Length: 144
Image (cartoon, rainbow, N blue to C red; front, side):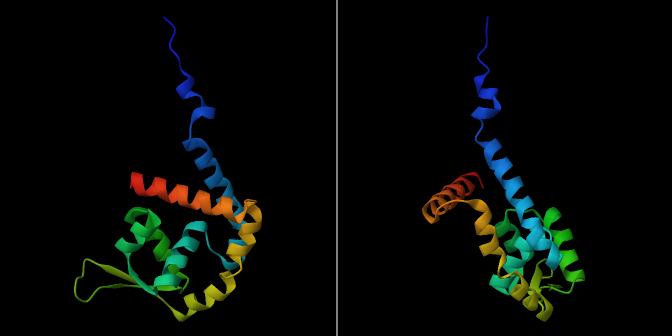
């Protein structure tokens, strides 16, 4: 009796090109992030903080699809670098509030060209990029 194992072929997996693209894109960020001494995870955390100015760790984790075990060391490192401040909420000590420092705000000026520089690495038309963005968030919305 012969089983059909086509569903186990790598070329038939949607997850693999998503994984490979993600890994390759993160690798492309490195030359832009090294001069400002950030990892990709630190960079996306800073993007949230630049946008929100102040946010709880829980809310940040939800936005970034990261658990606190992954996020905590990233935030500790950003605090050591002077970019953020971590403080317990006065009304509920269980909540940790992340806020942007002046040094963190200055870092934003150094990072502002990164998205445009990365856009040149992706090689998609604006329409294709928009479609991909919508599809990826559709997947994230359904699996989270």
